[in-house]
Image (cartoon, rainbow, N blue to C red; front, side, top):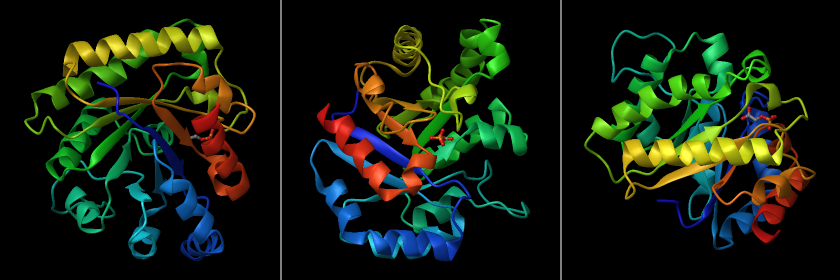
Length: 258
Ligand code: PGA
C-alpha cells in the first residue's frame, strides 16, 4: 500500500561539516519549519552522524523528521567506527538510508549486509530507505532489471520474514548514472521501472504493507515535474539541490503542487 503523503528526503551526504549543517538549518529555520508544516507531505533531513543530535533538538516541536545516512548491520560489539540502530533510535531518527550507491561503492556493502541493516532498523521501528540503482554500464547493456532484482529481492525477502510488519518501508530508485550528473531517465523508462518495483514489492511484502517508492538522482527545480507525473512515485530523495534552501523549497512546492 502506498503511503498517503509524499516523502521528500534531503540527503546532505558529507557535504556539510557539523558547524555548516547547524548554520544552514539555523539560517532557514522558519522556512524549513513552514515547508514541513504543509499537509500531504513529510520532510526528512539526513545530515551526517555528528549533526543528528543537535539537529534533533532544533527539530523538536516541528514536523521535520530526522534520518541517518547509514547504520551498522550489527546490534553492538567490536565494530570500530560503526553506529548501531539503537543509538539512531535514541537520537530520534525515524528514517535511515541504507544501500546508497556511494556506500555500496566506497564501503563494500553487499546485499546481505544491507539486508541485515534493514533488520536492525526495523527492530528499532526506524523506517529503512533502501537505495537501489544500476550503473551506467548496466543501463547501457540493458541489465537494469536484473541488477535491481539482486539489490531489491534479497533485502525485501528478509524484511518480509521479519515480524514487525507495521513499519513502513521506502525503496529509493536511484540510477547511479543519474546521481549528481544532471541526467535523468526518460518518462517511459521510469514507468517501466516503477511498475516493476510495485509488482515486486507487493508480491514479496504483501498488499497491506506500507511501501513508498521514491526517486533519487539529479532531482532539481527543472526535473521535479517529470517525477511528479509518475503515479507510482511517492516522493523524492534529493542530494545536491537540498543544500540550497531556495532550490529545495521550490522542489518541495513543485512536487506538491504540480
Ligand atoms: P543528487 O544525489 O540529487 O545530487 O543527484 C542524490 C543522492 O545521491 O541521493
